[in-house]
Length: 603
Image 1 (cartoon, rainbow, N blue to C red):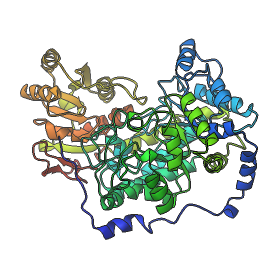
Image 2 (spheres, helix red, strand yellow):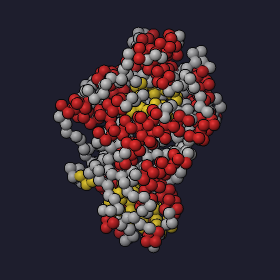
Image 3 (cartoon, rainbow, N blue to C red):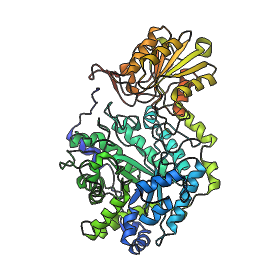
Image 4 (cartoon, rainbow, N blue to C red):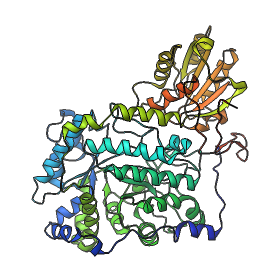
């Protein structure tokens, strides 16, 4: 396993990274003219309504009132209601999160109508309050809304491009399209600094390994989203970039000292707060240097109140990461987790495994005196402030006629292509092999990994790559060999390479024991020139040799793969540079390709 790269810092430098870096975002009540009105609303709410406002819940179905029967069955099984409208009526939830797998995001017009249906249900309640609808639209490998929406390069690709203007513009486009369909809170940008190549959950979702560079890109995206009318959410506080454990399935521990945390993990969050971030998401990670109790940060008062609220001066909305993840369920039961999160300083409780258990646990904690109603009111006020800022009290509905004017427009799609071209990174180019042309290398075999497709893809990566090559005049055929190609599949690929002028291999998270290494070696041995494209983590090149050239696309969404093909064919120049170092697989102390490495066709 590759060893992580860690910055060495002094205590003074670490302190400077946090203290004095940002003025507190808390403002006196007189600076919030809407607070008196919001407090009057809160004073008129029942305890049950207040509790409901703190929950953001999933729900199955494409419609708020008439989902498919399979989705009704799933809702009854997992939530105890039939529809989104019933969810709002029973639990008075303040937020709903959309997922593609929950069939919430079939197409833009359907999403807009679902959003409007949810708002109609919410405004029909005794205390009519709009719902804050959210999703995870990070772009790159995490997308919930697919085509015909504009799909943009993900964080590490933008880190490779390095341009704040591109990051801001990508967020503006994404935010404009989300707002048009009624999604007003996006759980992006990722503010984690990825310093561990073995990180299984962040990786290319991070802008890179340099805290200063990540901080600048985070701030740019915060401004882009929020100027488009969507609440940005930096995540995962206090920083999930140095772990080899996925918090979906376990409880990671970050071993950074407090000084290392301040210099490495804190700067992007400090930058987000300075940029006026609307919400910050917690991490289900243990950081003993910040809280010796070893509670996950989501449940840690020293981290969320002591550091985030008091030290960093953040007074916006704090939302948990999903409460169904094992990282937050390991130490406490599902009935304790939401109560402890609120005691720690959280405002929004995201997607508990059972809302009935969680909702009743919070209600009972207030009635028993473990949580005061004043504590509840403070979080409800923050949530309502955000809804007011977004204009949801004035106009909770979206205009269906505006969907086509905003979503997947030719201008947005063209800009996505331009941004993607500026992120594609040329890591290796032996003898100036690239670019190639149909005249010199017209017959191409495309093989490689075809991982499960994010919403930004129209087909397997091999098919997308072959199609893009064909559009540029090559004769390209695709053969999917998979993430773990079998010996028979490798033999088939070798046989298919006979008579070809070029083989393009899409690699995906190549490990020391990955048969993808054998696939590339066997293809190189045929004598046909091989070009590899790392379609996720750029670290693949440390474990693969013999190829004539290597490109990094940082994701296998169509926009990034098409850009990589244009670079390969010389229709675009490789302008990206590595935002993370790539170390030798055999000697982690030796850096093969440093941060900033990226070849051009002049070299």
